[in-house]
Length: 233
Image (cartoon, rainbow, N blue to C red; front, side, top):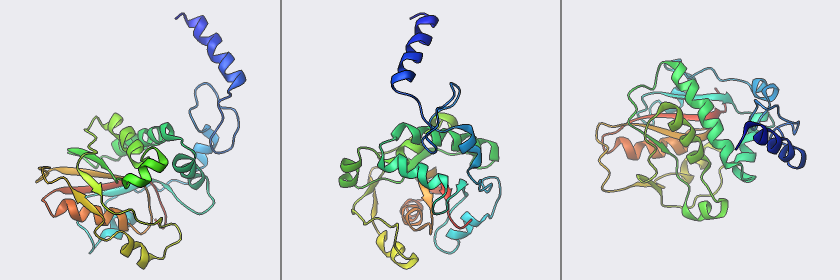
């Protein structure tokens, strides 16, 4: 296919199916993907990935043994990252999750931490929720991170054995009860001494990641965690 034909085809497609920013709905430039640069740069950054003992890591102190933890953005009710993650989860924007994961992967690289990762594992969805949604948003994010870090993505190790209720409106205490003992591991998985990077979309109380990480550390794994965004940084 010639370059001229590709450009013509792209122009025709944009005429009938314009590429719009997921957040503000303005037309994207040719060099922009999913979200315009104005909206992207307007999202408040957490800036905690390069910092040891940051507030994300402190969420897990005394609860789970976490090597490193961090996020890329700050999640507040009504801000643009909330809108973007809603679009990812509930408007079927699965490829946008890969894009966000690649952004996070580059930030992880720049941080100079999270080294010697053996496997990248997304927080799994229960099969019923997966069937309803059609994909796991954390898997899409993990895939993007895997693309950048060039580390294996493993979705065959951790399973969700309980279809827990959504935690959006739950108190901190109820969040912890909701995810207690909901994860199980493949009995054949030999992860002793392996460094696992657990991936989720948002960290609030950290209850979900904590519950999953405990299962992994119980069999001798080292665990670090990352997410696209976090509240209360």
